[in-house]
Length: 457
Image (cartoon, rainbow, N blue to C red):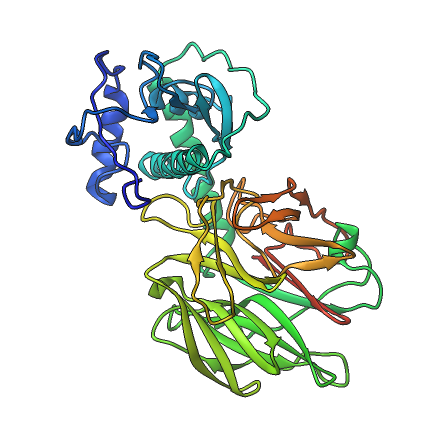
């Protein structure tokens, strides 16, 4: 919040913290492997300026109201982190956060759990989401955009304590991890791209994987392909993908061309950096071809220009620097340019916190939206393909990580995008169908008659 220009002071609650010996014990054990968690006990912050304040952020649910607005946080319907964590472990609630202003619900968040075995990592996911939700609520409060939302009744806490709920959680997580390793055997993690040629409505229109079957893009077992984008150029279709050779453990960008027989050839590498590359959003603008691949490992968003399409690309402009920005997805609208994606802030998931940047021209300058972070949600924040125009509406494919990364895809309609707010409708899940046998899809794109998807293996 200080980085956003706020003057911040802190104070300690007078009431004693709830007993958390069980949680502290587990975190201490896991810290020997992973280091301290966000939930580990730490030294209190310096108190700072005790003068008049505009907003109190109460993380203990104990602050007395004295005329100053009070923002409180709930974890899984409970007023403290320990009670909410215990509720989550008991299986009564999926990970859910709520912010309240003077007792009225004003914001909700659904963090993504990236690890359902190690508690310290689950705590990091929950607390990182909580930090983002507080930052979002504070930004909206001072912008006059923090308004009441639909509320949910608080659940009745379970009768058992932390350890009685933690042990079944750990055992189930361990069993799931063993079964996953048995299922995969010696095969590394795996993704697969698929494509089809259609003339009529596609997945974005039907909301289902039905109709003409998809054809898998073959690989040699030494690599996988993912994050497909397709471009129609001079009557030819080009498929851009992340290529991930297991030998190097680092993604590169490759391209394949659709043959006259309706089959894509073997992808060839066209862009490689010292860091991982993925999500090659390729597009035409002002008579040239550009690409914005994900390069979050280098903490930058870079615009590449085709010097000789499709095989030679040059770094054109660093659009955003010193940010871990994931799957940045471009939209040009009403003379402005927008980038939407998720940002990782050092802890928690990289797939549940949406941020937005805008610029007057493609090359910038790019500035962060005043209400960043826009949303905290495991199934409504990380893009899974380029914007889709349906009549007068714009639809964004978004990844559904409610169960696991790559677990599915939904479609959100853009309701508002300007300097004052960003709003989407809730995602409409893409349903399974006979056109693609895998459990879910992770990316959806189309150019002309060519529609492409990918799925986790």
